[in-house]
Length: 308
Length: 308
Image 1 (cartoon, rainbow over the protein chains, first blue to last red):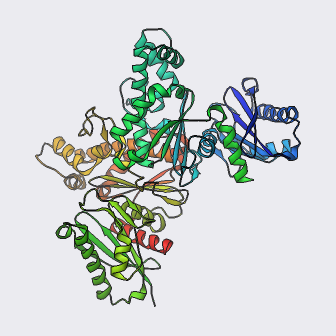
Image 2: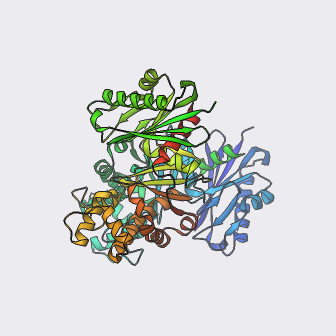
Protein backbone atom coordinates (compact mmCIF):
# COMPACT_ATOMS: atom_id res chain seq x y z
CA UNK A 1 0.00 0.00 0.00
CA UNK A 2 1.38 3.39 -0.99
CA UNK A 3 2.51 5.76 1.75
CA UNK A 4 2.02 9.51 1.67
CA UNK A 5 2.93 12.77 3.33
CA UNK A 6 0.49 15.66 3.57
CA UNK A 7 2.20 18.97 2.94
CA UNK A 8 0.61 22.16 4.28
CA UNK A 9 1.75 25.68 3.51
CA UNK A 10 0.17 28.29 5.77
CA UNK A 11 0.18 31.78 4.25
CA UNK A 12 -1.36 35.08 5.25
CA UNK A 13 -4.27 34.69 2.81
CA UNK A 14 -4.57 30.96 2.14
CA UNK A 15 -3.61 27.53 3.36
CA UNK A 16 -2.33 25.33 0.55
CA UNK A 17 -2.45 21.57 0.99
CA UNK A 18 -0.83 18.86 -1.08
CA UNK A 19 -0.62 15.10 -1.01
CA UNK A 20 2.74 13.65 -2.00
CA UNK A 21 3.77 10.01 -2.21
CA UNK A 22 6.81 8.81 -0.29
CA UNK A 23 8.68 8.48 -3.59
CA UNK A 24 8.01 12.11 -4.52
CA UNK A 25 4.92 12.27 -6.73
CA UNK A 26 2.52 15.14 -5.99
CA UNK A 27 -0.92 13.48 -6.15
CA UNK A 28 -3.28 16.36 -5.48
CA UNK A 29 -3.41 19.95 -4.26
CA UNK A 30 -6.10 22.00 -2.54
CA UNK A 31 -6.46 25.42 -0.96
CA UNK A 32 -8.55 27.03 1.75
CA UNK A 33 -8.82 30.70 2.64
CA UNK A 34 -7.00 31.86 5.75
CA UNK A 35 -8.75 35.20 5.92
CA UNK A 36 -11.97 34.00 7.51
CA UNK A 37 -10.07 32.00 10.14
CA UNK A 38 -7.41 34.45 11.26
CA UNK A 39 -9.19 35.80 14.32
CA UNK A 40 -7.31 33.50 16.67
CA UNK A 41 -4.80 30.73 16.45
CA UNK A 42 -7.48 28.32 17.67
CA UNK A 43 -9.75 29.17 14.72
CA UNK A 44 -6.89 28.77 12.28
CA UNK A 45 -5.95 25.40 13.78
CA UNK A 46 -9.59 24.28 13.35
CA UNK A 47 -9.32 25.22 9.66
CA UNK A 48 -6.03 23.30 9.29
CA UNK A 49 -7.52 20.18 10.86
CA UNK A 50 -10.63 20.43 8.70
CA UNK A 51 -8.56 20.90 5.54
CA UNK A 52 -6.35 17.91 6.33
CA UNK A 53 -9.33 15.71 7.23
CA UNK A 54 -11.07 16.73 3.98
CA UNK A 55 -7.99 15.81 1.99
CA UNK A 56 -7.80 12.40 3.65
CA UNK A 57 -11.50 11.73 2.95
CA UNK A 58 -11.62 12.94 -0.65
CA UNK A 59 -8.53 10.85 -1.43
CA UNK A 60 -10.00 7.83 0.39
CA UNK A 61 -6.82 7.47 2.45
CA UNK A 62 -6.43 5.37 5.54
CA UNK A 63 -4.64 7.17 8.37
CA UNK A 64 -2.10 4.34 8.38
CA UNK A 65 -1.11 5.36 4.85
CA UNK A 66 -0.10 8.85 6.02
CA UNK A 67 3.50 8.88 7.28
CA UNK A 68 2.91 12.34 8.64
CA UNK A 69 1.98 15.97 8.03
CA UNK A 70 4.69 18.50 7.15
CA UNK A 71 3.69 22.11 7.63
CA UNK A 72 5.39 25.38 6.69
CA UNK A 73 4.48 28.63 8.43
CA UNK A 74 5.59 32.21 7.72
CA UNK A 75 7.68 32.99 10.80
CA UNK A 76 10.27 31.64 13.22
CA UNK A 77 9.46 28.04 14.07
CA UNK A 78 11.28 25.95 16.68
CA UNK A 79 11.14 22.83 14.57
CA UNK A 80 12.76 20.61 17.23
CA UNK A 81 10.18 21.49 19.87
CA UNK A 82 7.37 21.88 17.33
CA UNK A 83 6.54 25.38 18.52
CA UNK A 84 5.50 28.43 16.49
CA UNK A 85 7.43 31.31 18.10
CA UNK A 86 5.37 33.96 16.32
CA UNK A 87 3.96 34.85 12.90
CA UNK A 88 4.71 38.47 11.93
CA UNK A 89 1.73 38.71 9.57
CA UNK A 90 -0.86 36.60 11.38
CA UNK A 91 -1.82 37.95 14.81
CA UNK A 92 -2.52 35.76 17.84
CA UNK A 93 0.40 33.36 17.49
CA UNK A 94 2.99 33.41 20.24
CA UNK A 95 4.80 30.28 21.42
CA UNK A 96 2.02 27.99 20.21
CA UNK A 97 2.92 24.27 20.56
CA UNK A 98 1.33 23.60 17.19
CA UNK A 99 2.93 20.20 16.59
CA UNK A 100 1.45 18.57 19.68
CA UNK A 101 -1.89 20.37 19.29
CA UNK A 102 -2.24 19.04 15.75
CA UNK A 103 -0.97 15.55 16.56
CA UNK A 104 -3.62 15.21 19.24
CA UNK A 105 -6.42 16.40 16.97
CA UNK A 106 -5.33 14.54 13.83
CA UNK A 107 -3.97 11.33 15.33
CA UNK A 108 -1.10 11.75 12.87
CA UNK A 109 2.58 12.61 13.25
CA UNK A 110 3.20 16.29 12.49
CA UNK A 111 6.39 18.25 11.85
CA UNK A 112 6.48 22.02 11.40
CA UNK A 113 9.08 24.45 10.05
CA UNK A 114 9.47 27.87 8.49
CA UNK A 115 7.86 28.03 5.03
CA UNK A 116 10.96 29.24 3.19
CA UNK A 117 13.02 26.52 4.87
CA UNK A 118 10.64 23.95 3.37
CA UNK A 119 10.95 25.58 -0.06
CA UNK A 120 14.75 25.38 0.24
CA UNK A 121 14.55 21.71 1.27
CA UNK A 122 12.24 20.95 -1.66
CA UNK A 123 14.34 22.72 -4.30
CA UNK A 124 17.48 21.10 -2.84
CA UNK A 125 16.34 17.49 -3.07
CA UNK A 126 13.77 17.60 -5.89
CA UNK A 127 14.25 20.85 -7.78
CA UNK A 128 16.99 23.16 -9.04
CA UNK A 129 19.51 22.24 -6.34
CA UNK A 130 19.78 18.47 -6.78
CA UNK A 131 23.30 17.29 -5.98
CA UNK A 132 24.44 20.48 -4.23
CA UNK A 133 25.75 20.63 -0.67
CA UNK A 134 25.58 24.41 -0.24
CA UNK A 135 22.83 26.53 -1.69
CA UNK A 136 20.83 29.64 -1.07
CA UNK A 137 17.17 29.81 -1.97
CA UNK A 138 15.74 33.34 -2.27
CA UNK A 139 12.03 34.02 -2.52
CA UNK A 140 11.19 37.39 -4.04
CA UNK A 141 7.61 38.37 -3.30
CA UNK A 142 6.03 41.04 -1.13
CA UNK A 143 9.06 40.51 1.09
CA UNK A 144 12.32 38.77 0.34
CA UNK A 145 12.98 35.57 2.28
CA UNK A 146 15.83 33.12 2.19
CA UNK A 147 16.57 29.50 3.02
CA UNK A 148 20.11 28.24 3.53
CA UNK A 149 21.47 24.75 2.93
CA UNK A 150 25.01 24.71 4.33
CA UNK A 151 27.36 21.78 4.88
CA UNK A 152 24.72 19.51 3.35
CA UNK A 153 22.03 20.42 5.88
CA UNK A 154 19.37 23.05 6.45
CA UNK A 155 20.75 25.97 8.46
CA UNK A 156 17.97 27.35 10.65
CA UNK A 157 20.09 29.38 13.07
CA UNK A 158 20.05 29.06 16.87
CA UNK A 159 16.96 31.31 17.11
CA UNK A 160 15.33 29.71 14.03
CA UNK A 161 15.52 33.02 12.17
CA UNK A 162 18.52 32.61 9.85
CA UNK A 163 18.26 33.48 6.15
CA UNK A 164 16.65 36.92 6.39
CA UNK A 165 18.30 38.02 3.15
CA UNK A 166 15.64 40.68 2.62
CA UNK A 167 16.89 42.41 5.72
CA UNK A 168 20.42 43.13 4.64
CA UNK A 169 21.13 46.85 4.82
CA UNK A 170 21.51 48.76 1.57
CA UNK A 171 22.20 52.39 0.87
CA UNK A 172 20.98 53.22 -2.58
CA UNK A 173 18.97 56.09 -3.90
CA UNK A 174 15.29 55.62 -4.56
CA UNK A 175 14.04 53.17 -1.99
CA UNK A 176 11.54 53.83 0.70
CA UNK A 177 13.72 54.55 3.69
CA UNK A 178 13.55 51.96 6.44
CA UNK A 179 15.52 54.05 8.91
CA UNK A 180 15.72 57.74 9.79
CA UNK A 181 19.35 57.88 8.65
CA UNK A 182 18.38 56.89 5.12
CA UNK A 183 19.42 53.25 5.00
CA UNK A 184 16.90 50.65 3.92
CA UNK A 185 16.50 46.91 3.90
CA UNK A 186 17.25 45.01 0.70
CA UNK A 187 13.59 44.00 0.34
CA UNK A 188 12.61 47.66 0.25
CA UNK A 189 14.64 47.98 -2.95
CA UNK A 190 13.57 44.78 -4.65
CA UNK A 191 10.30 43.74 -2.99
CA UNK A 192 7.06 43.66 -4.91
CA UNK A 193 5.58 46.92 -3.66
CA UNK A 194 8.70 49.04 -4.17
CA UNK A 195 9.11 47.66 -7.69
CA UNK A 196 5.51 48.61 -8.44
CA UNK A 197 6.08 52.16 -7.19
CA UNK A 198 9.30 52.40 -9.20
CA UNK A 199 7.53 51.19 -12.32
CA UNK A 200 4.61 53.58 -11.91
CA UNK A 201 7.07 56.46 -11.69
CA UNK A 202 9.13 55.29 -14.63
CA UNK A 203 6.15 54.61 -16.90
CA UNK A 204 4.21 57.70 -15.78
CA UNK A 205 1.20 55.77 -14.56
CA UNK A 206 -0.73 56.28 -11.37
CA UNK A 207 -0.46 52.69 -10.22
CA UNK A 208 1.42 49.68 -11.47
CA UNK A 209 2.33 46.19 -10.29
CA UNK A 210 5.24 44.05 -11.43
CA UNK A 211 2.84 41.92 -13.50
CA UNK A 212 2.11 44.99 -15.66
CA UNK A 213 5.79 45.46 -16.42
CA UNK A 214 6.08 41.76 -17.18
CA UNK A 215 3.21 42.04 -19.66
CA UNK A 216 4.88 45.03 -21.34
CA UNK A 217 8.19 43.18 -21.59
CA UNK A 218 6.39 40.19 -23.10
CA UNK A 219 5.06 42.54 -25.79
CA UNK A 220 8.65 43.58 -26.55
CA UNK A 221 8.62 46.96 -24.78
CA UNK A 222 12.27 48.00 -24.42
CA UNK A 223 11.61 50.25 -21.39
CA UNK A 224 10.04 47.32 -19.60
CA UNK A 225 13.04 45.16 -20.44
CA UNK A 226 15.38 47.90 -19.20
CA UNK A 227 13.34 48.15 -16.00
CA UNK A 228 13.92 44.45 -15.31
CA UNK A 229 17.61 44.72 -16.17
CA UNK A 230 18.00 47.47 -13.57
CA UNK A 231 16.10 45.33 -11.05
CA UNK A 232 18.49 42.48 -11.85
CA UNK A 233 21.52 44.65 -11.14
CA UNK A 234 20.00 45.72 -7.84
CA UNK A 235 19.20 42.15 -6.83
CA UNK A 236 22.72 41.22 -7.92
CA UNK A 237 24.23 43.78 -5.54
CA UNK A 238 22.59 42.07 -2.59
CA UNK A 239 23.46 38.63 -3.87
CA UNK A 240 27.17 39.57 -4.08
CA UNK A 241 27.15 39.75 -0.26
CA UNK A 242 25.62 36.31 -0.04
CA UNK A 243 28.04 34.85 -2.57
CA UNK A 244 31.13 36.27 -0.85
CA UNK A 245 30.04 35.38 2.68
CA UNK A 246 28.52 31.93 2.05
CA UNK A 247 30.29 30.67 -1.10
CA UNK A 248 27.19 28.79 -2.33
CA UNK A 249 27.29 26.47 -5.34
CA UNK A 250 23.93 27.72 -6.48
CA UNK A 251 21.46 30.54 -5.85
CA UNK A 252 17.88 29.51 -6.55
CA UNK A 253 15.56 32.41 -7.30
CA UNK A 254 11.90 31.83 -6.51
CA UNK A 255 8.80 33.72 -5.43
CA UNK A 256 6.30 35.69 -7.53
CA UNK A 257 8.82 38.19 -8.88
CA UNK A 258 10.90 35.31 -10.30
CA UNK A 259 8.35 34.95 -13.12
CA UNK A 260 10.45 37.74 -14.62
CA UNK A 261 13.69 35.80 -14.25
CA UNK A 262 14.26 35.69 -18.00
CA UNK A 263 14.27 39.50 -17.99
CA UNK A 264 16.25 40.22 -14.81
CA UNK A 265 18.37 37.06 -14.58
CA UNK A 266 21.10 38.07 -17.05
CA UNK A 267 21.79 41.42 -15.31
CA UNK A 268 21.72 39.70 -11.91
CA UNK A 269 24.31 37.18 -13.06
CA UNK A 270 26.43 39.91 -14.65
CA UNK A 271 26.50 41.93 -11.42
CA UNK A 272 27.74 38.88 -9.54
CA UNK A 273 30.38 38.22 -12.18
CA UNK A 274 31.55 41.84 -11.91
CA UNK A 275 31.59 42.26 -8.15
CA UNK A 276 31.97 38.89 -6.40
CA UNK A 277 35.42 37.48 -5.66
CA UNK A 278 37.00 35.28 -8.31
CA UNK A 279 36.81 31.87 -6.62
CA UNK A 280 33.25 32.59 -5.47
CA UNK A 281 31.87 33.80 -8.78
CA UNK A 282 33.52 30.99 -10.73
CA UNK A 283 31.67 28.49 -8.57
CA UNK A 284 28.21 29.96 -8.22
CA UNK A 285 25.31 29.33 -10.59
CA UNK A 286 22.16 31.45 -10.47
CA UNK A 287 18.99 29.71 -11.60
CA UNK A 288 15.25 30.06 -11.38
CA UNK A 289 13.40 27.82 -8.94
CA UNK A 290 11.96 24.70 -10.58
CA UNK A 291 9.11 23.54 -8.38
CA UNK A 292 7.05 26.75 -8.15
CA UNK A 293 4.17 26.32 -5.71
CA UNK A 294 5.01 22.64 -5.12
CA UNK A 295 8.40 23.36 -3.51
CA UNK A 296 6.86 23.51 -0.04
CA UNK A 297 5.07 20.20 -0.56
CA UNK A 298 8.33 18.50 -1.53
CA UNK A 299 9.97 20.19 1.47
CA UNK A 300 7.26 18.75 3.73
CA UNK A 301 8.06 15.29 2.45
CA UNK A 302 11.74 15.73 3.36
CA UNK A 303 10.94 17.26 6.75
CA UNK A 304 8.65 14.38 7.66
CA UNK A 305 10.87 11.61 6.28
CA UNK A 306 13.99 12.99 8.01
CA UNK A 307 12.31 13.52 11.37
CA UNK A 308 9.80 10.71 11.89
CA UNK B 1 54.54 11.84 28.81
CA UNK B 2 52.79 15.06 27.75
CA UNK B 3 51.52 15.33 24.20
CA UNK B 4 51.65 18.51 22.12
CA UNK B 5 50.50 20.15 18.93
CA UNK B 6 52.65 22.61 17.02
CA UNK B 7 50.60 25.52 15.72
CA UNK B 8 51.92 27.52 12.76
CA UNK B 9 50.41 30.74 11.44
CA UNK B 10 51.81 31.74 8.05
CA UNK B 11 51.42 35.45 7.32
CA UNK B 12 52.66 37.73 4.59
CA UNK B 13 55.52 39.07 6.71
CA UNK B 14 56.16 36.45 9.37
CA UNK B 15 55.57 32.85 10.36
CA UNK B 16 54.40 32.53 13.96
CA UNK B 17 54.91 29.22 15.73
CA UNK B 18 53.51 28.01 19.01
CA UNK B 19 53.65 24.87 21.09
CA UNK B 20 50.42 23.90 22.83
CA UNK B 21 49.74 20.93 25.10
CA UNK B 22 46.90 18.57 24.28
CA UNK B 23 44.96 19.99 27.24
CA UNK B 24 45.26 23.56 25.93
CA UNK B 25 48.25 25.24 27.58
CA UNK B 26 50.38 27.41 25.27
CA UNK B 27 53.95 26.48 26.24
CA UNK B 28 56.03 28.68 23.98
CA UNK B 29 55.86 30.94 20.92
CA UNK B 30 58.38 31.91 18.28
CA UNK B 31 58.44 33.84 15.03
CA UNK B 32 60.46 33.83 11.82
CA UNK B 33 60.43 36.34 8.99
CA UNK B 34 58.57 35.36 5.83
CA UNK B 35 60.00 38.16 3.74
CA UNK B 36 63.38 36.59 3.01
CA UNK B 37 61.77 33.28 2.03
CA UNK B 38 58.92 34.41 -0.18
CA UNK B 39 60.64 33.96 -3.54
CA UNK B 40 59.08 30.54 -4.11
CA UNK B 41 56.83 28.15 -2.28
CA UNK B 42 59.78 25.75 -2.02
CA UNK B 43 61.88 28.33 -0.14
CA UNK B 44 59.00 29.12 2.19
CA UNK B 45 58.42 25.42 2.90
CA UNK B 46 62.13 25.11 3.77
CA UNK B 47 61.67 27.93 6.29
CA UNK B 48 58.57 26.26 7.79
CA UNK B 49 60.39 22.97 8.22
CA UNK B 50 63.40 24.69 9.77
CA UNK B 51 61.21 26.66 12.16
CA UNK B 52 59.32 23.56 13.29
CA UNK B 53 62.51 21.53 13.70
CA UNK B 54 64.05 24.36 15.74
CA UNK B 55 61.01 24.46 18.01
CA UNK B 56 61.21 20.70 18.57
CA UNK B 57 64.93 20.90 19.42
CA UNK B 58 64.82 23.94 21.69
CA UNK B 59 61.93 22.36 23.63
CA UNK B 60 63.74 19.00 23.78
CA UNK B 61 60.67 17.24 22.38
CA UNK B 62 60.59 13.73 21.04
CA UNK B 63 58.73 13.43 17.74
CA UNK B 64 56.46 10.87 19.40
CA UNK B 65 55.27 13.62 21.76
CA UNK B 66 53.98 15.70 18.85
CA UNK B 67 50.43 14.68 17.91
CA UNK B 68 50.72 16.80 14.80
CA UNK B 69 51.27 20.20 13.22
CA UNK B 70 48.29 22.49 12.60
CA UNK B 71 48.95 25.29 10.12
CA UNK B 72 46.92 28.33 9.09
CA UNK B 73 47.56 30.10 5.79
CA UNK B 74 46.10 33.34 4.38
CA UNK B 75 44.03 32.03 1.48
CA UNK B 76 41.67 29.29 0.32
CA UNK B 77 42.84 25.93 1.62
CA UNK B 78 41.32 22.57 0.70
CA UNK B 79 41.69 21.24 4.22
CA UNK B 80 40.37 17.76 3.33
CA UNK B 81 42.94 17.23 0.59
CA UNK B 82 45.63 19.26 2.37
CA UNK B 83 46.14 21.53 -0.62
CA UNK B 84 46.82 25.28 -0.71
CA UNK B 85 44.67 26.53 -3.59
CA UNK B 86 46.41 29.91 -3.70
CA UNK B 87 47.62 32.72 -1.44
CA UNK B 88 46.49 36.15 -2.67
CA UNK B 89 49.37 37.98 -0.93
CA UNK B 90 52.20 35.48 -1.31
CA UNK B 91 53.12 34.72 -4.92
CA UNK B 92 54.14 31.28 -6.19
CA UNK B 93 51.46 29.23 -4.48
CA UNK B 94 48.96 27.48 -6.68
CA UNK B 95 47.49 24.07 -5.84
CA UNK B 96 50.44 23.15 -3.63
CA UNK B 97 49.91 19.81 -1.78
CA UNK B 98 51.45 21.33 1.34
CA UNK B 99 50.17 18.75 3.80
CA UNK B 100 51.88 15.78 2.13
CA UNK B 101 55.04 17.81 1.33
CA UNK B 102 55.40 18.76 5.00
CA UNK B 103 54.49 15.33 6.34
CA UNK B 104 57.24 13.77 4.23
CA UNK B 105 59.85 16.30 5.36
CA UNK B 106 58.84 16.46 9.03
CA UNK B 107 57.85 12.85 9.65
CA UNK B 108 54.88 14.31 11.53
CA UNK B 109 51.14 14.44 10.84
CA UNK B 110 50.15 17.82 9.39
CA UNK B 111 46.75 19.47 8.90
CA UNK B 112 46.28 22.81 7.14
CA UNK B 113 43.43 25.31 6.97
CA UNK B 114 42.65 28.96 6.33
CA UNK B 115 44.15 31.22 9.04
CA UNK B 116 40.88 32.95 9.97
CA UNK B 117 39.15 29.56 10.18
CA UNK B 118 41.72 28.55 12.80
CA UNK B 119 41.15 31.78 14.73
CA UNK B 120 37.40 31.08 14.70
CA UNK B 121 37.98 27.51 15.93
CA UNK B 122 40.28 28.78 18.69
CA UNK B 123 37.92 31.50 19.93
CA UNK B 124 35.00 29.05 19.74
CA UNK B 125 36.47 26.33 21.91
CA UNK B 126 38.94 28.27 24.12
CA UNK B 127 38.07 31.95 23.86
CA UNK B 128 35.09 34.29 23.66
CA UNK B 129 32.76 31.76 22.03
CA UNK B 130 32.83 28.90 24.52
CA UNK B 131 29.47 27.12 24.64
CA UNK B 132 28.08 28.65 21.42
CA UNK B 133 26.88 26.62 18.45
CA UNK B 134 26.71 29.49 15.95
CA UNK B 135 29.19 32.32 15.86
CA UNK B 136 30.90 34.71 13.53
CA UNK B 137 34.50 35.72 14.07
CA UNK B 138 35.57 38.92 12.27
CA UNK B 139 39.19 39.97 11.99
CA UNK B 140 39.64 43.68 11.32
CA UNK B 141 43.14 44.41 10.07
CA UNK B 142 44.52 45.51 6.71
CA UNK B 143 41.64 43.55 5.26
CA UNK B 144 38.54 42.24 6.95
CA UNK B 145 38.25 38.44 7.19
CA UNK B 146 35.66 36.20 8.72
CA UNK B 147 35.29 32.70 10.12
CA UNK B 148 31.91 31.04 10.53
CA UNK B 149 30.86 28.38 13.03
CA UNK B 150 27.37 27.23 11.99
CA UNK B 151 25.34 24.27 13.25
CA UNK B 152 28.14 23.54 15.72
CA UNK B 153 30.81 23.12 13.05
CA UNK B 154 33.22 25.20 11.02
CA UNK B 155 31.62 26.33 7.75
CA UNK B 156 34.33 26.48 5.08
CA UNK B 157 32.11 26.58 2.01
CA UNK B 158 32.28 24.17 -0.93
CA UNK B 159 35.14 26.18 -2.50
CA UNK B 160 36.84 26.77 0.88
CA UNK B 161 36.27 30.51 0.56
CA UNK B 162 33.25 31.19 2.79
CA UNK B 163 33.33 34.02 5.34
CA UNK B 164 34.57 36.87 3.15
CA UNK B 165 32.75 39.44 5.24
CA UNK B 166 35.12 42.18 4.09
CA UNK B 167 33.79 41.72 0.58
CA UNK B 168 30.18 42.57 1.20
CA UNK B 169 29.12 45.46 -1.04
CA UNK B 170 28.48 48.82 0.58
CA UNK B 171 27.40 52.12 -0.90
CA UNK B 172 28.44 54.86 1.45
CA UNK B 173 30.10 58.16 0.85
CA UNK B 174 33.79 58.48 1.57
CA UNK B 175 35.36 55.14 0.79
CA UNK B 176 37.86 54.43 -1.90
CA UNK B 177 35.72 53.11 -4.70
CA UNK B 178 36.22 49.43 -5.49
CA UNK B 179 34.13 49.55 -8.65
CA UNK B 180 33.61 52.08 -11.45
CA UNK B 181 29.95 52.48 -10.50
CA UNK B 182 30.90 53.76 -7.04
CA UNK B 183 30.21 50.76 -4.86
CA UNK B 184 32.93 49.48 -2.58
CA UNK B 185 33.70 46.47 -0.46
CA UNK B 186 33.02 46.66 3.28
CA UNK B 187 36.75 46.39 4.03
CA UNK B 188 37.38 49.53 2.01
CA UNK B 189 35.24 51.40 4.53
CA UNK B 190 36.55 49.85 7.71
CA UNK B 191 39.96 48.39 6.83
CA UNK B 192 43.13 49.70 8.37
CA UNK B 193 44.32 51.83 5.47
CA UNK B 194 41.00 53.53 4.78
CA UNK B 195 40.62 54.36 8.47
CA UNK B 196 44.12 55.91 8.45
CA UNK B 197 43.23 58.05 5.44
CA UNK B 198 39.94 59.06 7.05
CA UNK B 199 41.73 60.00 10.25
CA UNK B 200 44.41 62.05 8.49
CA UNK B 201 41.70 64.03 6.76
CA UNK B 202 39.67 64.54 9.89
CA UNK B 203 42.61 65.56 12.07
CA UNK B 204 44.28 67.62 9.34
CA UNK B 205 47.52 65.65 9.34
CA UNK B 206 49.48 64.45 6.38
CA UNK B 207 49.59 60.83 7.45
CA UNK B 208 47.97 58.88 10.23
CA UNK B 209 47.44 55.28 11.25
CA UNK B 210 44.72 53.89 13.48
CA UNK B 211 47.22 53.54 16.33
CA UNK B 212 47.61 57.34 16.37
CA UNK B 213 43.87 57.80 16.82
CA UNK B 214 43.91 55.17 19.54
CA UNK B 215 46.67 57.09 21.36
CA UNK B 216 44.66 60.31 21.10
CA UNK B 217 41.54 58.61 22.44
CA UNK B 218 43.56 57.19 25.33
CA UNK B 219 44.57 60.77 26.19
CA UNK B 220 40.90 61.69 26.32
CA UNK B 221 40.65 63.48 22.96
CA UNK B 222 36.93 63.77 22.18
CA UNK B 223 37.46 63.98 18.40
CA UNK B 224 39.36 60.71 18.50
CA UNK B 225 36.55 59.11 20.51
CA UNK B 226 34.01 60.45 18.01
CA UNK B 227 36.12 59.03 15.18
CA UNK B 228 35.91 55.56 16.70
CA UNK B 229 32.19 55.91 17.36
CA UNK B 230 31.62 56.66 13.70
CA UNK B 231 33.79 53.67 12.77
CA UNK B 232 31.67 51.55 15.10
CA UNK B 233 28.47 52.64 13.38
CA UNK B 234 29.97 51.80 10.01
CA UNK B 235 31.14 48.38 11.17
CA UNK B 236 27.70 47.89 12.69
CA UNK B 237 26.02 48.50 9.34
CA UNK B 238 27.92 45.60 7.81
CA UNK B 239 27.32 43.42 10.84
CA UNK B 240 23.55 43.94 10.60
CA UNK B 241 23.67 41.94 7.35
CA UNK B 242 25.54 39.14 9.06
CA UNK B 243 23.17 39.14 12.05
CA UNK B 244 20.02 39.04 9.92
CA UNK B 245 21.31 36.41 7.49
CA UNK B 246 23.12 34.09 9.90
CA UNK B 247 21.38 34.67 13.26
CA UNK B 248 24.62 34.12 15.25
CA UNK B 249 24.65 33.91 19.04
CA UNK B 250 27.83 35.91 19.17
CA UNK B 251 30.03 38.10 16.99
CA UNK B 252 33.67 38.00 18.04
CA UNK B 253 35.68 41.03 16.94
CA UNK B 254 39.40 40.44 16.51
CA UNK B 255 42.34 41.70 14.45
CA UNK B 256 44.58 44.72 15.01
CA UNK B 257 41.80 47.31 14.80
CA UNK B 258 39.95 45.53 17.65
CA UNK B 259 42.44 47.08 20.10
CA UNK B 260 40.04 50.01 19.83
CA UNK B 261 37.00 47.91 20.71
CA UNK B 262 36.31 49.87 23.87
CA UNK B 263 35.95 53.00 21.72
CA UNK B 264 34.02 51.59 18.73
CA UNK B 265 32.22 48.66 20.40
CA UNK B 266 29.32 50.63 21.95
CA UNK B 267 28.38 52.33 18.65
CA UNK B 268 28.72 49.02 16.81
CA UNK B 269 26.34 47.34 19.26
CA UNK B 270 23.93 50.27 19.09
CA UNK B 271 23.76 50.09 15.30
CA UNK B 272 22.88 46.40 15.50
CA UNK B 273 20.23 47.10 18.14
CA UNK B 274 18.73 49.80 15.91
CA UNK B 275 18.78 48.01 12.56
CA UNK B 276 18.77 44.24 13.03
CA UNK B 277 15.49 42.32 13.32
CA UNK B 278 14.05 41.88 16.81
CA UNK B 279 14.62 38.14 17.33
CA UNK B 280 18.12 38.42 15.87
CA UNK B 281 19.26 41.43 17.88
CA UNK B 282 17.84 40.06 21.11
CA UNK B 283 19.98 36.97 20.70
CA UNK B 284 23.31 38.31 19.47
CA UNK B 285 26.18 39.42 21.69
CA UNK B 286 29.12 41.38 20.30
CA UNK B 287 32.41 40.90 22.12
CA UNK B 288 36.08 41.43 21.64
CA UNK B 289 38.23 38.39 20.85
CA UNK B 290 39.90 36.91 23.92
CA UNK B 291 42.91 34.99 22.68
CA UNK B 292 44.67 37.69 20.63
CA UNK B 293 47.65 36.23 18.76
CA UNK B 294 47.17 32.82 20.39
CA UNK B 295 43.79 32.16 18.75
CA UNK B 296 45.42 30.47 15.75
CA UNK B 297 47.51 28.23 18.02
CA UNK B 298 44.39 27.06 19.85
CA UNK B 299 42.70 26.59 16.48
CA UNK B 300 45.61 24.40 15.35
CA UNK B 301 45.10 22.21 18.40
CA UNK B 302 41.42 21.71 17.49
CA UNK B 303 42.18 21.12 13.81
CA UNK B 304 44.77 18.47 14.63
CA UNK B 305 42.80 16.75 17.38
CA UNK B 306 39.61 16.60 15.29
CA UNK B 307 41.32 15.30 12.18
CA UNK B 308 44.10 12.96 13.27
